[in-house]
Length: 248
Image (cartoon, rainbow, N blue to C red):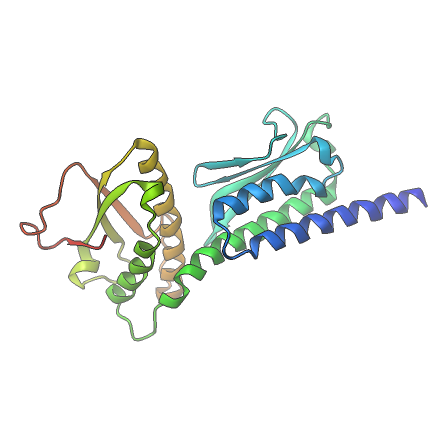
């Protein structure tokens, strides 16, 4: 009887953990960064030793860790994916265990489920923002790329990324894009190195999201994303180079 009660208590903790994560991922107005921070602090409630359990989420190079996460303790890790490609990970540490083999089988399955929820959250958060700009069957390859680019530009936050001038060029600007064409962005950035790094990670996230849209629209796979970024060292004179057009 004691064993049965213990088992039921563990399942209750797992369900509470999943419910909390689902609740956080459904908060559509909360920033992605805040959701990751809250999930990292909440995951431990589903493990056998909540007080000794920490969590770390990595997403495009950014790290969101709970206060008691330890990279030296036994750990379990699962990937966070977008469009089938690993773009981050979620890791759980337990300072009360002797080694990773001491994690329960149910805990391994729980982390797999949590990583699946996070993968869905990331993908649908990006696609949800772009949803009203999904391409129609009548759009040519260059038209839907430009429509999706407009959705990204609308979300640019200068307070996070610094001042930037973004130009579009290549086949999308010329109206010659084919099903396998990238979106070429030429960026003049005026800000700190940290702001530039944030902008790069942000664009990589959008690149993977738009790549998934491209796969749905064209069947073409873009394993490295669909946005190609070129950093400019000086101001681009669009009067001299009319093949480039400023979009931000």
